[in-house]
Image (cartoon, rainbow, N blue to C red; front, top):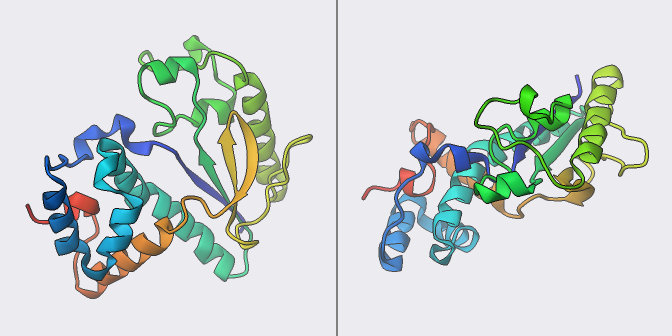
Length: 216
């Protein structure tokens, strides 16, 4: 059965309880990552440098939980010869930006369902405002509905959503749909290798990502 799967640009902005505290010194940050990741540490530090501060920690957790899992599903499906379609939702609007909640977990749901008004959203949800929201929502409803109907996501007048197997293709929702390839290069490969090592060592995955995988 075809698969449509994706994740959001800043998944864990509303899940800060899972966010480890960043060390004050870069040397301590590097030491802890090296102790957890071994020879994978240079790649981790390239993708999530100490200079990125909290954003690096947010992205490491996003990728280790949501990004890797979504892309792994798309890859496994493609490897089995079955169509899979990957997306990244990274759309922002003034109300979300004002609260530093661009691309937070589940922020794509109102757009997929066409529920953009205050009355259709939870009380504390940043209500979509500014330009492009209605057009983006219509496009996303088109894609999701056509996928449910025929197994292939389409939206008239918008980019063709190519299967992931075609060069790690995916669709980026950021103001409007954009066709692209290989979201966050290196992210999947790093997390796949790290997860495989933990499995081989009989270690649970859980939230053991980045600093959370490293002893203090």
